Image (cartoon, rainbow, N blue to C red):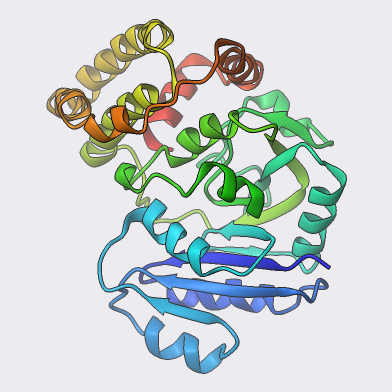
Length: 309
């Protein structure tokens, strides 16, 4: 039977992590491990978790490695054939892992699964993580999509072996988009799996809400991602109208400085993106765009989600 590694990244959410680990303790699928990456929490995580959950492989990182860096730490220490990622403020059902294994076995073209994310409190689609349009909420079968949701997703080990780890230089936001584009160099696709559900406790802290920091990282990172993964002509045709819209939005919200800071750093700091550059063939990028256009939400909603997800 396939072995599964569940990788969780946490920072100062010991109560939420306990709830998640307890939900994982009731899994019907027995062949799995849990890896918890503690991004240097200042609460009681380092005391409570090892004592209460001794089977959990607990790693404390004494610096802020960012989301992709933290997940990479979990990946390189994982033993699983399938790598499952769940946000620390979520819980899952008892057949969660069983459904993941079954889906990977059934969907041979699926290299990455992105789960249905429901609001923990009202059991409706979690709008804070939803990257698709309204019609996708009613999809009841597994279907190829353009990208995956950070809150709940899974990789085949073969995908990591083929395209490598997440891009740590991004640090914060859009690592999913970069990885989804790189996936198209393989025969695999991202599949949305509505039968696999994660219940997300939508954070009252709003750590990833629209602010100066997220505006800067979004603008910078999207430049790097397109330099790395997309031809120059296709990048210009996509980024030019997008950045006009983002600038107008930044003017309206008072983030003009952070918009230009992101643009300048995106260009000036792009050396690594150029070194890693491997543009997708035209047909593959068009495949990505077609999937994205099929699933995309209305313009204003897309722009807001682009800037905070």
